[in-house]
Length: 107
Image (cartoon, rainbow, N blue to C red):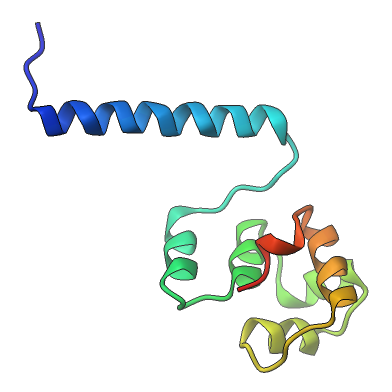
């Protein structure tokens, strides 16, 4: 027999639902990269640009991502520091290089 509070039980149920969603996403999108929770938290807090978080998640430098997307490293830097609003073609190239959707790498 296990005894727990109602709040603990509800947390357990919520966690199991989250785990089921994660497992289904891994099945549906086996090649999609994952993001560490500290990077995701920084994005949600507005401290880190989503592009920077995903780039770091897959272990690329700005120069490596730029090369993979056919862009200049300064372009990646300027996007991540929010100095410029990139063109759609730039976002498409970056998203393709990261195997993500455009909506994943934009604010």
